[in-house]
Length: 372
Image (cartoon, rainbow, N blue to C red; front, side, top):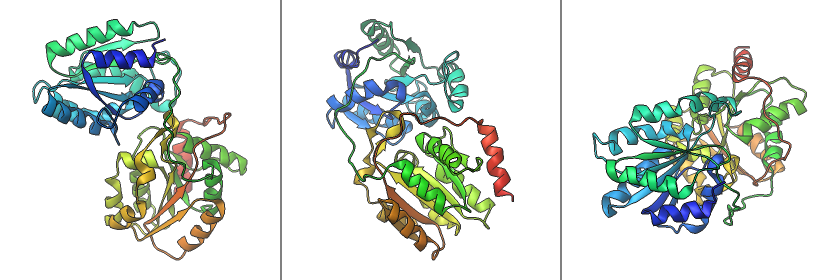
């Protein structure tokens, strides 16, 4: 396996002066090392991958130096616009190094949302005209850095490293997210599902939807929620569409801080449309927990000010089970959209499972409830 420290130092010695991106589970050991050892002017964890590409471009414009942008391959969707209309050789021709975790690689078992993306990632890079090199556990870090950076020098445009599962050896990050609460996410969800018994529930990707699925079983109920898989950052927009389509039922969006930050522009749209039946729940643990626990900036944000400025009718907050129950009682007195921030702790059960039903089966179950 490749030592994250060795790889990081190798990139620095080869001329990379800034690291930016969104954490990925396949890159978590490398990302953790970068986060621990990159100073404020050397590492920026961005809200989404397109932000990171633009940041890398701006850095090059003022320094002439190279930035590395790390991401999960699903994040290519966010990055395609600045890659094609900003960094591409036919536009501004800006050199940068992409480090991409290859989720859903053909032949490697993965979750449903990664299968399609994994299959088409090499073709996407080919279509974008971005040369790429595949990294795996037996790759020589010195050789692949030399080859990739050499190609970057020749083309003066983006070059990618496509990283397979199990490439990096273990590194435990030292920087911990701010602890906002002792309330476990699963306990928060247990209270929310109890309170939202007659509502349509749309939950964000990652461990949140996995826990919602298991809690339905714990409650002796069949699956009925829309479990968002992939499409990170879009949960609130899905919920807005559902609220407009089913105005006679309350729609509860269960979002995460990393997800909400990724496409924060959805909030003012919700505030402008003003769906009376929408409750936007933000489970805030100030971390990208599902991909390694790296801290987000959500622990330092005033979501009350943000939500009210965006046009939400009311903001509520809780950090324990009793607080959730009390806040939910207040929700009954208000039209939406309501923003409900629930501060939670980091952590989940070691034996947390994954949905046994397919995404299509989950979709059909949700639609059956929505049309009752």
